[in-house]
Picture 1 (tube, rainbow, N blue to C red):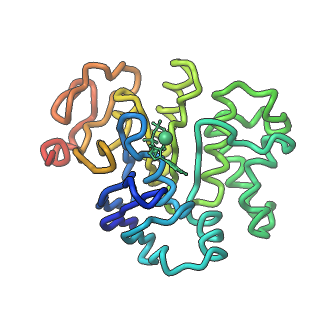
Picture 2: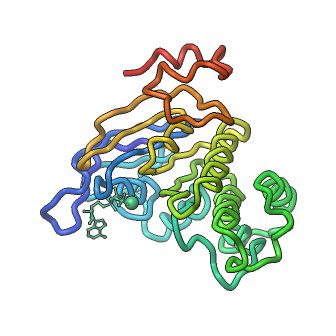
Length: 257
Ligand SMILES: Nc1ncnc2c1ncn2[C@@H]1O[C@H](COP(=O)(O)OP(=O)(O)OP(=O)(O)O)[C@@H](O)[C@H]1O
Ligand SMILES: [Mg+2]
């Protein structure tokens, strides 16, 4: 669904921030990209999401080579095919929660009434149905991020990109957001790609990709994290089997590369 082939990126023409990244994302995956600060995670995410172009290499989304798109068409793709959630400044400050959620539709000239059902479903699912008339400044960090997630999903994007979505939250709100992302992936079938510093948060995904100095150093299928359990002890793929419904996942569990 999303492919990256030999992606390279340098900002100054000398130092390469990405040094040849190859990646294929299938529909329905929840990928966590882990890596140290400066390893190139955000750079990779912005290129995969069509917000920036690589110096070398190819990104395709649904068979479309992003490099073939003009700026205008790339902007349309960003609005309609992908959803973004960042660590900070996700919401337009002078729009209500509801208006923020509908923003991608409005920008694309859609009639928001046609998406009312989806809006109701998402705001309930994300537990923000009672605050849709509030302004972003009146919300907690967790509420802001849940609003940003609703906005990222309203258009039913091919893939949702999140860059450290809980980096600004306390651990309780952070857990809540991670659990929501897990459910959005497993229950709603959304394809999710998150960037994180946190080993713990990474384990909510179905696949973990480690990046170091602009190169992928690990690509592992993950065992699902049990809902209530802290996942601190979960190691690599074979652990955390207890309390998890692994029957239909047994195949994946042993497929670590
Ligand atoms: N627009 C830019 N211009 C110049 N250099 C940049 C730009 N964006 C990123 N870089 C450099 O590229 C490298 C990787 O940055 P990137 O933001 O991708 O790292 P990261 O893995 O997301 O780090 P963090 O975990 O701190 O967010 C850094 O050395 C950074 O300074
Ligand atoms: Mg970053």
